[in-house]
Image (cartoon, rainbow, N blue to C red):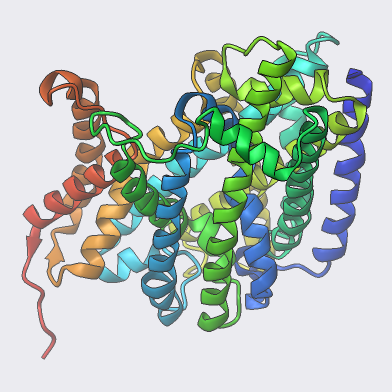
Length: 485
């Protein structure tokens, strides 16, 4: 597919996105930016969250992992569902009861200053790395298929994308992102459906024939009963449950959209409907992955070294111009929600949690100027992290994303769990030490698990272990709660 056509697709889609931004961000203020004036429609938030949750990582990595782990990823997705139910029934009522803008102010009310700052710090670290991973996978495809042919350096490609994202997020914030996520989710899902349709036509198979071929090759196998393996089904299920709790329920980006809905009941409807739909969509991505491997086998296409590259290679080089264009639009649709929401949430968290926007007497105009500076600063940080990841990447991005999440979201999981479950207070000044030691202990355990635990390999359950270590560490610095007279 011509690099020029791919570039024109990017430009056309971006122009349409900017029109939506212009329509939705008029008369936006700081409250619009942070929580959308509490006027977001629950069904729009639910639909848009599909794109924000899936991102370019799902679009590229999930189809690619079918070759190595078949459909075992679905067990993780079933775990997601129960995690989202926990968010709807436990965390959302807490956030609405306290009328939070930043969810980490809960930690300040519960434990104190250092717990609050520690929670906000781990969110900023987690979301910065996660957003960089997600954006990297998309930009890397465009670099390989377009900009390498023109001699454009990778850093310039990344900078161009980040500038585009900056231009449409710096003003409207959450109010804008609710609408842009809706648009982007539509195009991403459309791209997947059309890709499945075209590949099935190329293979001369109907729907039942496709499922038969997938079953015959064993791709639909979900349950791995080897407890030593990273994809052991119980590790997958409980790992998925706690990944969704941590990466959605304890994540300012995802919760910022949820608490922008006017009432708790509507926000819960958003969470339950979103979680049900997400199960079916992830199954569709896995079916697409199986079809890609069937197609490559039928056509004699050599499998790429990195499984993430399988979908773009087939879509852009083997399925014709229509599928290629649809793939590019779907890929961009998957990329933008990863970075726009992250930039908005990072800016919101830093302004509220570290610059104390809610407690200062600054004018709205001064707050807006500072918000712009913070927004652009985080864009520069994202650029740097993506370039570093480009240098060191050697694995499927989805694997790295969840590995990093296990380390950085674990302390958040432990902090919130202790706050909700335990009735004791903490010696607040020691909380940062516990939350830094926990990921370090987990890293040591993970690096030595094969030798120390009879060939055992940690999978997604490492996040649970991290949260438990944090919880136990916090109990060591706890004290009886002082009852007010």
